Amino acid sequence: MKKIIDEVSGEGLDKLMGERVTLFCCRYIYTGKLVGIDADCVLLEEAGIVYETGAFDKKHWADLQPLPNAWYVQKQSIESFGLLK
Image (cartoon, rainbow, N blue to C red; front, side, top):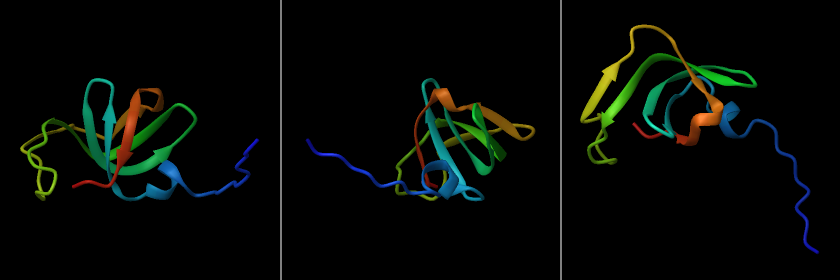
């Protein structure tokens, strides 16, 4: 039997705190500065919903609609995340 027994702190969403992240969720793509994480959700400032990505190697989204305030996203809806644009 093979086992991996490494515990690494500061990975995943924690590692991206303070960065402008992109969250691919079950229905929408959200982007914003990651400023908070708790057991159920993450908090984005300067947040927006991406309706059209355009090419991923371009600096700006083809269609980004800003959200009016800080925005909470449920962690259970996040399929993948990272630094993109």
